[in-house]
Image (cartoon, rainbow, N blue to C red; front, side, top):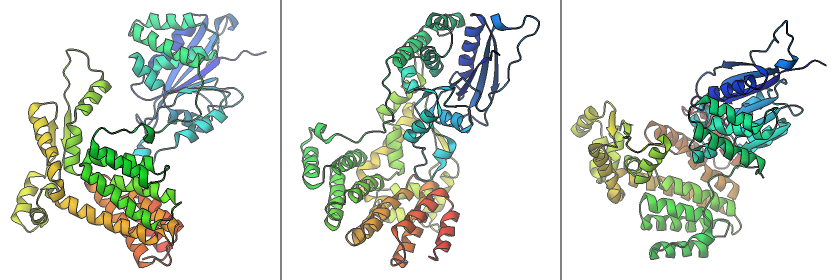
Length: 502
């Protein structure tokens, strides 16, 4: 019987230690009676494609003394024993390439996500469903080991390559003991203690795993645990409990939290008032319409203006998060540079005087021309410096006068018109009302992104208003998806022509 080498493919992104992991496996084999070979094939870029490291191990005891074994330079579909993926999408790509087979391959992957360029560029929620990825990768592999390895690495103060190495050891797929794996890390001589700690944590996790079949998204609040100390907030939450169905309450409560954070309690009360107005027109059991309206109304009412951006960038929690992400050590100095390029429109919209804002937006006014000179080029603001922090903190302080700004007035008018459309159809045509609520997805971001999305939103709503008897829920959904697929509106125009709506 011909002896075949052990074939291992590693899919990792830049900076995750894929090369270190490959070298560990080579060292593991060479120091324990195996001939080893490794190659790497770099992807297009750090996220559009991962680097594939390929390792083959062949036992020296079975090698011909006259000739060295011929080992392959790259993995072939249907001919891989172990696939190690540093992120869930990379595991899916390995399956797509045919590297994972149900009769042979052990697939070891982290379930955390680093979103691809295509996912980030999508006008709507372009994320690939993690549950679906896990389902398909599980079906494709002989043995499937998966958990959030990035979190284990973070908790261990190490990198994900050490967690993958520990998981590989615990899987039992390679003919080496745990001690031999650990000795390999020790021979490396760099970051030994944290790497061994991450290795041990991963080994224990795999050995005692009772892995869930799905990945949890950010959970909605549990209404039973919400006990606000502020009397006005407590009264508002009690109002939510009294007037909304249990399945709708978590969506509304999260909206209340978001809008208090965005503006104040009175603004959150306006949010609840608006939802109650929609509920009066909706069917009593139409919980889906109320859930989606609560979700998208909260998103629209917490619109992103320059004030909001500045406020978020100067929060203490953000500095703490950045320090944690870069793993700032004692004695080190952290510098944070923000690139900002506000346009005349964005400055005019946040000034707490509607008339002044409209005057500055007038391209013929001398104020507009003067302001444009100062906004032609972007600026780098160092928020970790006192001067930069005070500048953005002052801008964020305009929040208290936001209601007097042109942007606030315009957004409230747009929101009211959108809600009126939902209420108009909530009784007679609830399916259409639901799609109208979901069309808010087109309105997001700030700057040019916001303008393009808003333009597409108005185009879709105009088609609905002018052709109400012909626009079905399915057609409206198709128009919305077309607008999300192409920010320039060409796909939307194509669908409008197809349905003869323009």
